[in-house]
Length: 212
Image (cartoon, rainbow, N blue to C red; front, side):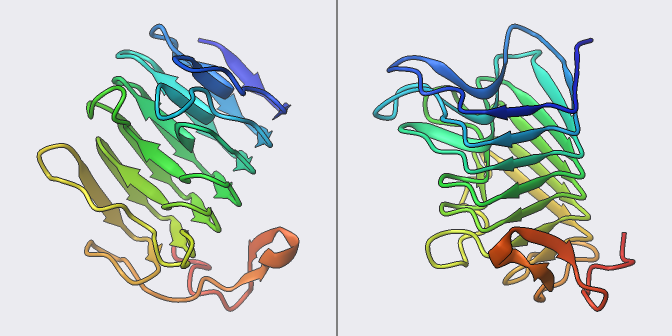
């Protein structure tokens, strides 16, 4: 197992049409552990809706990235993409991560280029202030003990619509703007300290403090 820890990954990607990739690119059955990374300012692969990528791009069956204690931000792309992006059977498990201020989808499970047999699990993550949808569902997505807030051009596009034949979404013990069915979910302002200055820590009186 490969371990990548305490690195900043920036200014990567920008591949051409029919290319995949981005800041960190996982394929071919690899199962890396990524810890304490700053993945910032990267460009997803692909062009004109062909192929794709993102800050962390995982593709092909058997490929799975476990990413912990990391920040994924300021990702852009000219194709199908997400700050966290899984396609063609790729899987991502993200724990204690901030997916913030991306100029694309925050978390993308699947893409039209590669089908719907993808999976992303978010545990204690914050997905906020992404200019496109917070979480795109064309595969299986699980969210627990997380904050999903203020995504999309109107600040309210937190989850994409999805067909249950092609995807699933399970959310529990999370703060979701606008609410979402599931045990322990709440609809409230998370009370970030100073998001305009990039400080997404929680104020002492945040409804998320002490809730797991």
